[in-house]
Image (cartoon, rainbow, N blue to C red; front, side):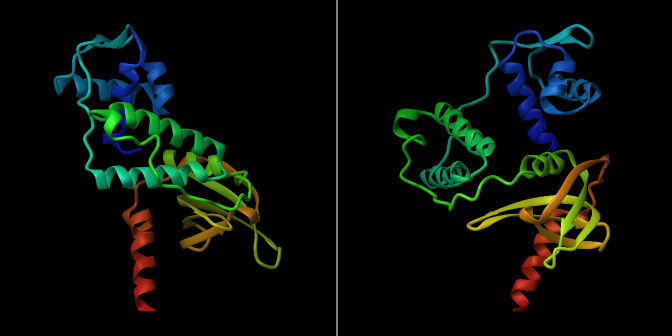
Length: 228
């Protein structure tokens, strides 16, 4: 999770709680208490009215609130299309999260009664194939930058074992795939969820390496596409 996103989520957690300890915030954000202490110190230095201290707990002044979110009509329609696609996925966790996000955005909009996301006329359809068994694990590994240990069956059914850095998930009409940096091949690879034999979190994290990042993967993919 990028720091800007983490700080926003931290403020949102503080808004929704009374006095809360750093350990509780750390568990909600899936970071260490030390990171929470550092982020709260940064927010306090930026002028946010956060009261409390380490070992006691923290409270965001009820006088503080985030400004209302303002979008253009085109931006709202883009959000509605994206949420509709997420809601149509056969992953119940993501579908539920998309519905909750739609409701949150709706209430944050100025004059929400005139800019409805709840009844937007945009829809997405998918053939139901069943949510991939390991999709939630891959999402967690991407979010936490965790190495995955994969046992995978190739096109002939032969299993291979490898360590990988997960970078992206692809939800397609006929199935799901995920991409990442394969340490065995020292290159980017994409795997089908339906060929996964076993998948587990390894004990280590991977660093932020620009040459092995999602941006590098997409740049190479775009370059290869333009070559054809």
